[in-house]
Image (cartoon, rainbow, N blue to C red):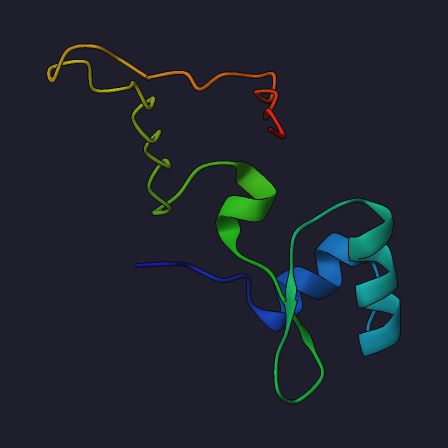
Length: 86
């Protein structure tokens, strides 16, 4: 479950009581936030503390070519063949 700061906590964090003031302060300090439908900023606890219910992202496995069919990649000629015009 994702936890969010309350309105009062966002006011305390940004030292601003207006929407514009809070958003400006959050942007200036690089704190991740979203804007709710009513225009007020929304901040997760994780964005401020770095701890919380947000799971760590799993790294995608590194891609490796499949060599089980043998032979690998067949290469084509890189220079064009000359055609005889007889």
